[in-house]
Image 1 (spheres, protein in one colour):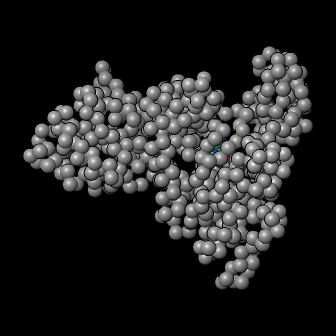
Image 2 (image 1 turned 180 degrees about the horizontal axis):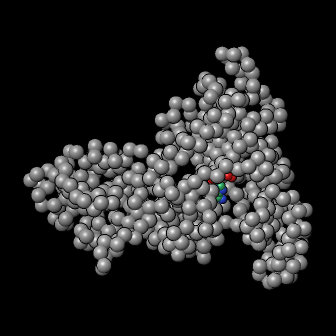
Image 3 (image 1 turned 45 degrees about the vertical axis):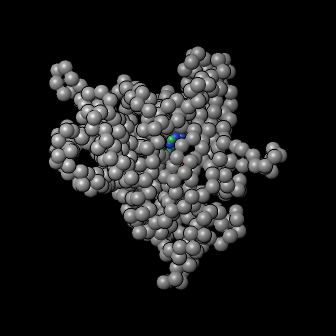
Length: 458
Ligand code: GAP
């Protein structure tokens, strides 16, 4: 796939109503996006599938919904106030601003600039890198730019009222570890999962919905006994990739990268990313991060809050701070991977090509479309629509030729088209057309619900 292919997918997503540019009637707001009627269904389906896999079907885990605005001390304890920032450098000549590490990596992709100190970054740039905009080599010193969005609580805006919009959902889980352990009487190992908005004042947002400033995360913090952490780390890596395979993402478009000890964040013992072959880039890019965060977060919160966050193992009578394995993925980033992976321009014959999105039935915005062959059949078609709409999100379309309607549904990924024809009144049957094979089969109206139920299973 290519950048050109990516532009096509982005355009398709906009035209079909998956994603709209944010604040469009006011001239837009750079890198903000709204999710249209199809996009919101797809996002909801992604979240539903994740929740089912990571909470409902997983005996170890429970869910949580913590606040977006937390006590600011949370972010001091987590290290975000001190370290969640990007190093910025300005060209003195043309005033262009750059992320210093990115500037170096674009100059020489073999250099891992994220490992360098600000002094090292600054020295390297001053010595080697000319400004990509104006060609001069005269820069300011590096300043750290805080990525958390600030806000204030109450009517007085001063230092005391300052708070942050959460940059990750994870900390809301850590600060509720004790509550969950007490109220659920869960024994370690157990996990707490959460889906919610996160905000980052990203300096280099872009590539459509890949990197945005307001996004949703699906995160799980899995608390386990120190010593068992490496085994659980492998378990959750496999669990996550299996979920992506089950969603139908092509195996060739996914790969793991395991980071070397020197590349790890200060809190991590091990980290790997599941990368996806996004068409906007020559390299695979991060889709899902899985980290062994050790006891770092709970230890920090214990010392900053003075609350005892240790766990008493009732079997061995040992007291310890659990280790944590964290899989974390963005809803929009997974949605983008699914859009890219499923988009296809299928050549039917020399004269005919169809755009089709091969989305898994559990993820597609509509699982089926009800299509009466003629407007005269709308009474019966509406009855079928009403029956299905109680359980599924279904489309209804009685305009244009049946061929055109099939193509419209193919283009938005609807897996099944249910056609009501003049025989339906006599034989109580409809035709179901499969989006991918375009094959049709006739089934009894009473069997449609169980047919669709079976298909949306993950
Ligand atoms: N709690 C760990 C954490 O937040 P992260 O690697 O910064 O780790 C986890 O983020 C995941 O969240 C990423 O793998 C990505 O899927 C998603 N994500 C992070 N920043 C994002 C952004 N600006 N826009 C969209 N998704 C983002």
